[in-house]
Length: 135
Image 1: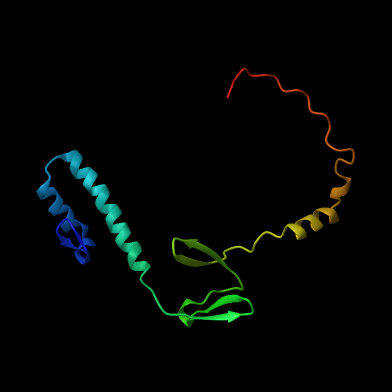
Image 2: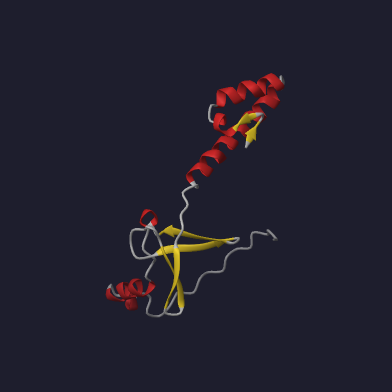
């Protein structure tokens, strides 16, 4: 991959790339615009470098579900992962927080006396004045 005639391994030395760009374009505004593009290109190259860890995993059936046996270097902490699909890629991400347990939350509210809160229901709300704005 080449960026402005410089091989991508050299693109990390941004001063060389910037010198090449400045030699080709003398307009200040264009130079600033290209600098922003170069920063984005370097960021994309760095992100690609982080995404290069690849391996092979075995697929197998566990009951009626398909499962993946991950290699040791790809294992996750905990007992759950977040699964998403983008195009034909399936992405597994670690769960940072435990999922919200609505049943436990409602049980806790009942234990705190939530049944006694507004036993007659919500009071009648006064009418709101019309502000004249039409949407």
